[in-house]
Structures are given as structure tokens and as C-alpha cells.
Picture 1 (cartoon, helix red, strand yellow):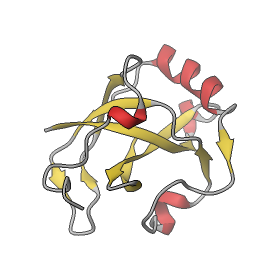
Picture 2 (cartoon, one colour; picture 1 turned 30 degrees about the vertical axis):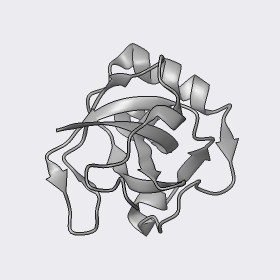
Picture 3 (spheres, rainbow, N blue to C red; picture 1 turned 90 degrees about the vertical axis):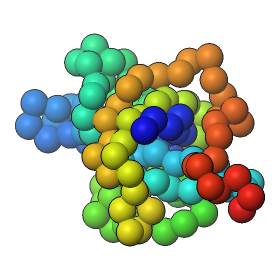
Picture 4 (spheres, rainbow, N blue to C red; picture 1 turned 90 degrees about the horizontal axis):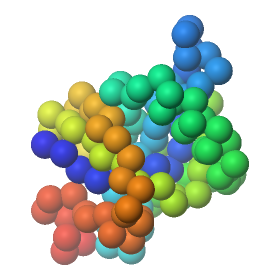
Length: 126
């Protein structure tokens, strides 16, 4: 399955990615709010990571722009950003806590705005 997502934060990488993004923290609309659905750390191209790191460093905010609690393991060392960028992820399903299972980054959707991102399947009525 694939879903358009809104970037709400990032975590620094380790090892070869120590000066770049290690994973993106993503959300989708749920009613009028953004609902955190997990982090994605695979599927990125090296050039994309460098560009993304520079761009997100200029979009910081103090708190996550989401309506639900973010697990401590995901929020630890997180850098929150304005929810202005849209991308696409592929995933296997959802965990019991409503997070993506095995998400993989598919790419940026530069022609799409956050207001155009659809809710998760089955969430439209919330």
C-alpha cells in the first residue's frame, strides 16, 4: 500500500548518516488535525538526504503539530518542523498502535500541498 504523508519532524542519522537525516516523522490528516503515523528511514537517495537535511533545518518549531501522542522512542531527539512538505511512503499495514509497518520512502510530491493529502483509508469520517 502507499499513502501521501506530511512531514512533521526528523531524527538525525547515525554512522554514515550522522550529519544527515536518519528518519522522517510523518503524519496524515484526521479531521482537522494531523495524526502521527510513524517514521520512515529507508528508501532515500544520498543526494536527496543532503538536500532534505538543509531544507528541514530551516523549518523548525518547538512542538509536534499532531493530535496524538508520539512514542518516546520516536520523539527522542526529534526535530519538529512546520507541516508544509508532502511525500509518499509505501507500507505493509499498521501496528496495533496505528503506526506504519515497514514504511519505505517513495519520494517527494512537490506539486501537492498538505491540504491535498487524504486521510487514511477508513478515517474520512473522523
